[in-house]
Image 1 (cartoon, helix red, strand yellow):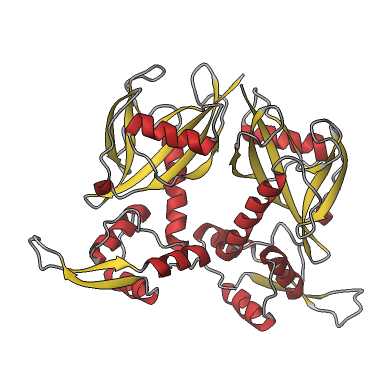
Image 2 (tube, helix red, strand yellow):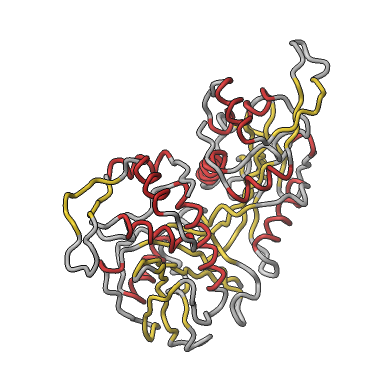
Length: 221
Length: 221
């Protein structure tokens, strides 16, 4: 007998860090461990809808575009049962949402991708594969629309790329390459209530963003 | 009750066309239709091993590196049962293999990707998604090692890219860009037994190929 489940890797960006939304499991097996929001698949609905429903039940997040990563199916990945899980990921702007723990989730936490707690099942591997995909995507698609507020500074944008790629980028080089994409619109505004010299605020040109996303490019960071 | 299956999209290149290996189904449902080599998942082995075993049973192909595409799980994709299939793809050089139909496969055929017959289940969608992934990959990774014989002409290589991308490429532009990658080694040999002027034969520099595959690039064809 093979069981199927869905698991969701929700990435966010906060305090200059790439974060992933984890729940604390309130049910056996592996009760008390942190885990991805996930559950057994509902046989009456598509995998995608099942992932959406699971995410809503466990975290209250809804209407988030999920992209499938892949199925994980090592025979011993779940204790005592053969469970194949189908994983999805999404990028969201943390400030736009207030997830609430529900159903079998005891609590929720946005965890730093570089300092994950011990995780249930093979969820560390699923997060690792999702993060690898994100690292590849960042070089061939514009990324940041979902992770950043509508108006942001160039430093904010660079921090997003640095957090995803887990490396420092040269400021001048980064700005030159971003400018070449003609992706940003100067809002004419500046940061407010900051201790340092206020930076200019930009937003994405949605048309260019969608065009680049479709056509692809290579962002040689 | 949810069932799981595996399906394999095996791409090859022949007569200047991108081909996919299909079997004729000798079992219900959809007996007589062409389909991807696939079968129900063996609950005792990993998904990957199950895909390898299925491919071997139905086509005799073995030891082919398969990459997972994703799970397909619309509720009505299989008649009368809920079957979630996990799909894999591979690129092979047709001349190196002699697949033989076995088990529930009545016969085998290498079908032109641009002229597919009516297919069982949602296999047209699975092939479409696999082909889309290949089109993206061709721009960010070197492709051709698996599809071409060890020694090939620049025209052969261009034909592979044209077949995958389903578009004509400018010869001069293509050659300039391939040269920039420093991926090819001149074997010093020329084609034999050809009606036209024999072309120079090249092979891939395996070290550069692996390096480019790992680092990525953007091949702006």
